[in-house]
Length: 115
Image (cartoon, rainbow, N blue to C red; front, side, top):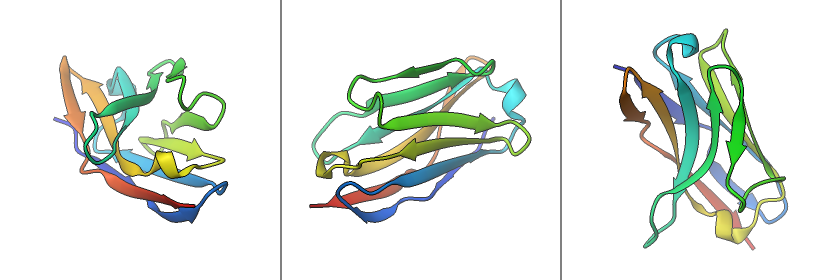
């Protein structure tokens, strides 16, 4: 099993930046891929970005150029740097990890962007 704990959410204004963190209970080398998702009220959960064990990244078109996913293997932590935030980025942000053919989720962290 893998426990994931997100942090870093909060209230920001339009155009500001925020960095989310996701700490994993296992070595990130043992996790094949990690990603960030978000879910706004009344909407489906949306994939934002993924990063593989080898560091290969992939982004949704909606955040490409504004969000950056990275990982610190020494800290077993994945980050999501978000810049130029917009009100439509308001959502609960979730961390995900694929480990041993199973998918694990964190509890989520709220990001609210005011206009």
